[in-house]
Structure formats: structure tokens, C-alpha cells
Amino acid sequence: MKGDFLLNNLDNDSFVIGISADKNEEILGLVLAEYKELNRMGIIYSVNVRENSQNKNIEEKLLKFAEKELKAKGAKVLYTNIFPETSPNMKFTLRKQSWMPPALDKTHFIISVKDMNQEKWIETSTFPEGFSIKALNQIHEAELESLRNADWYPKHLSPLENFQFGETSPQTSYWIYFKDEIIGWIISINVNNEYLFITSLFIKEDRRNHYILRPLLGEVIKNQIQLTIPYACFDVRNEDKKVLNFFKSYFKDYIHHTIEIHSSYKIVRP
Image 1 (tube, helix red, strand yellow):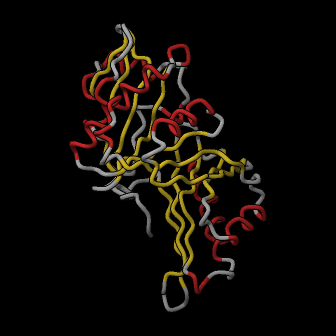
Image 2 (cartoon, rainbow, N blue to C red; image 1 turned 180 degrees about the vertical axis):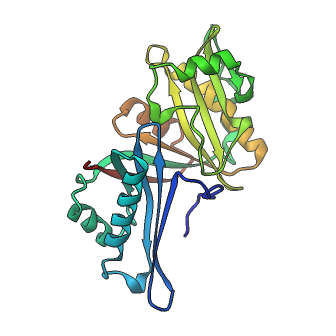
Image 3 (cartoon, rainbow, N blue to C red; image 1 turned 60 degrees about the horizontal axis):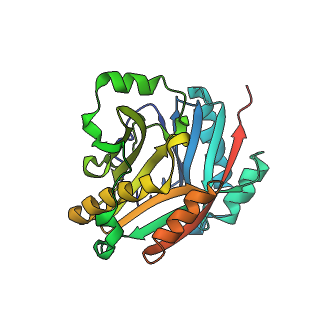
């Protein structure tokens, strides 16, 4: 297995790991997936096959295995991302197994922040009147309970979800307040010594504007520079054109790399 993520806790019932091996017990391929109880969703993170073992239907067997196991855990829908490097065999297998055609879903940004301390807006941007932020561990239990029952944010961006990849970074994760009310958050994960992954950024629709984003991101970047983590990465959904244009504009001189990510899903039959 390769990639940027550090897998901390695979030893629990939510994960599905399937391995294909030959008669000599050499591993030919691997599938890694996870069942999310929140939306009864099965997420297939990766299907990898050795180069010299491709075109042997291994992807198909691994995908069928993952679907069977995720369904047994209660999944009603399966979801996966399609990256530029995803093999043609995998794309063919998804079609063959009745997955929906991949559609452009989001853009993955990798930003080089190590030299951004020269950007004046990072230091000078201030929150509009009434807006403020608090560190992640400063929230009260009553506020947490209110968030659990709230319906004003999409569940896939829930700040209460336990992420399996990396550890939450308290120095670069904040609650956003308007007066005494939580209206949003930014959650960051320390993936490793090189990458900080912003996993969730959400602000209530009636409170959104770039005057909040600039000071918020300024706080995150200042602290990331102090942590000496050189790169930040995050996903922006392509349907969010204003947010997409904001990041392309404010980080245009520091974009290290972007990746267009397609996604596919499949409804699991009873």
C-alpha cells in the first residue's frame, strides 16, 4: 500500500481489507474500504494490483469482495473516487459491475505554505464584528450536543466524525462563532510531517462571505508555518464555484499541485 495517508487504526470492525494472492501466497492485489454508519455508506478507498498481475480480473474479484463485506455491515450505497492514475482495468470493472459513470466531483489542492508568511493578508485580516474563533478543545458539552442534533450542515462534513487517517491538529482546527453561536468550523488532520489535510470546512449558508475565510485561513496558515509542515491539502467540490474561485485566487502563487477527482457510486441491492 502506498500513499500520503498514515493508517492509524485498521483493527476495527468498520474496515474491510481484501487480499488476492497466488498459489505461492504472493500478494497480487489489495482492496481497502470502510463502512460509515452515519450514512450507511461503504467507501472504497483503493484497489491496487501489482503491475505484472493486471488484466487478470483481480480488480473485479477484490471489488466484489468489498461490496459483499460492506453490504453485510449494512451499507446501502457504495462510493469511490477515480483519480487520474486509476487503472483503465478498474474503470472498466466499475462499469461492468453496474456502478454509475464517474462524474467530476472535486478538485484536490496541494498548497505550499512554507513561504506564505510574506503574504500581508495572513497577518492583517481581522474578523468582521461579531465573528470569532475558538480552539477545538474549548467547546462546551452542551454545544456539542446541540451540534449532534443540528440539521444545518451536511453530514459528510460533520466535525464530530472520527477520522482514521492521521490525528486531528488542535493548533490548526477551530470553531467559528457569530456572537455566542457556533456557525461553522475548520478541522485539520496531521497526515505526516509534510502534509496537513483540511478535512472539513463549513460555514452556515446565511453567514458565509470571504471576509470570514481570510482571517480564518490566516490563523491556520500562521500556526502551520510554526509547526514547520510545508504543505496543506484539501478538497473543494466543483459545484462550489465561488469557493473554488476563492482558493484559486488567494493561493494562485502557492498552488503546488491540483488533481481533478471523479467519483462513482452504486446503490446496493437488498
